[in-house]
Amino acid sequence: MTDSERIKRNLTEIKQSLPPDVVLVAAAKTRSADEVNTAVTAGIDAIGYNYIQEAERMRPLVEGTLPWHMIGHLQRNKVKKAVELFDMIETIDSERLALEVNKQSVAVDKVMPVLIEINSGKESNKSGVLPEDAIGLIRRINHLSNLVIVGLMTMGPRFGDPEDARPYYRITKRIFDEIKKTEIPGVEMCYLSMGMSNSYQIAIEEGANIIRIGTALFGERAEKRNIPLITRN
Image (cartoon, helix red, strand yellow):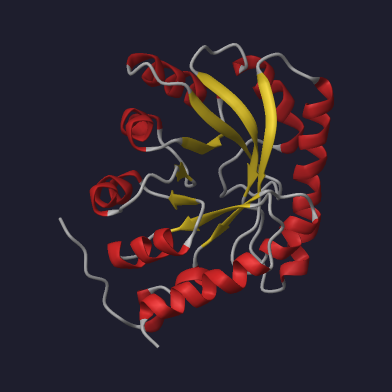
């Protein structure tokens, strides 16, 4: 079976397991343009990248007009490029970052949909706003003219058993529901981005309607298969 055939088969199997309203973001980190283009043709809903430099290199090589999502931690000094490259930023976790995204969006006359990243596991080595601080952050940035909050995102702690991720998805869904009930002006709670290859089914059970899938779609990354990565400068 070729790589293209494998990706198409994997996507068919994943899609068959999804409710119709769930958006499948292909987490394309380290994947080749051929792999990503195969996934685009096969029917993914959006393309996700963790790193600005890789997204910038890949954007001209990827076909189609699908939305591009920033799904990794975003540094403020990379915001200008992120606003140019992406159609949604899923990882807003501070007022300073939100202000910079708004500033750069104003500069190019673009309204940027964003998700607030929740550090649902309260891990010191992870980005994201703490669950108890999420509403406060939203109230401080909901007035920004060129940034619209459309939901929440969480990574959650990584576990071998996907069932162990369930409590952290529940925490994020609870915050999502609280914010939605509060009806903060200018905030549209439409999307809950949770779940990756090993846990997306649990995430959907807990309310996710965006999932970020890499390995289950493309297969193991080259470095995990002991294949040297080929990079372009």
